[in-house]
Amino acid sequence: MPDHTPAPNAPPRYALAPIEDGSPVRTPQPGYCPIHTIYHGIDLSLFSTNKNGLTNHPPYSILTVARLVEKKGLYTILESLRLLFLRNLPFRYTLIGEGPLLEKLESIVYQYGLTDFVEFTGTLPHEEVLRHYRKADLFLLGCTTAQDGDRDGIPNVLAEAMAMGVPVVATRVSGIPELIEHNKSGLLVPCDNADALANATEQLLTNEALRQTIISGAERKVHKVFNNRQLIMELGDIFEENGIVREEADTMSEMEWSSS
Image (tube, rainbow, N blue to C red; front, side, top):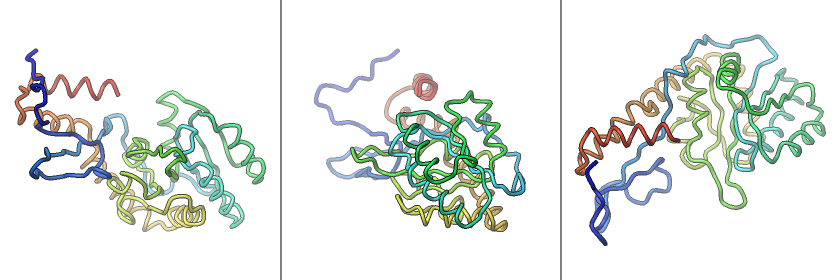
């Protein structure tokens, strides 16, 4: 394999960023190298839609797939579910994932009187996760910035749900608005706002015209910007433009996606 290591102290020819949010330079300027946004993407062959409107009559099936950590905004999600319960909206909520907040979350569910309506599954095999996507009426993710500054970029589970035809409610944080356009491919609300999360969830569960608009828009969006095969080709083009031969670029790209 050719050695493309830059000479010592040589300026970088280009830089890659997984999201646009927070990246300082998008176009070449004196003293800067160009920064290219290459999203992580998903293998769309593994996530295909088979939905047509609501999958079930009430109680509505609400789904979250996430590690049980602070930046996922799970406390806010549970508070929003409490508000929906008080509004007499029938639902069942499934949370797939494991993490250090499990006991605390279970305690909150008990305190809110939601034990009969909330299920913690732990980590599940891929096929089981797909089964839950297929029967879900809505995907809910309340990402926020943790106290230590940790936050998501663009969670792959959002793209997975969108590709599976599950309408999404999420928060305006980090790179999420780069994937989800409000009222077009999902609904976005402020972080840490349970009332806004509950309102958006209720709206997307009960407004069929909006659901269909968002389901269609989400599928188009994820195929346009989150198809990892297309993104691998774009990454290969960048490598080739900067002196790395196509064969090596494709190999490096495949290694990057398969190892992440």
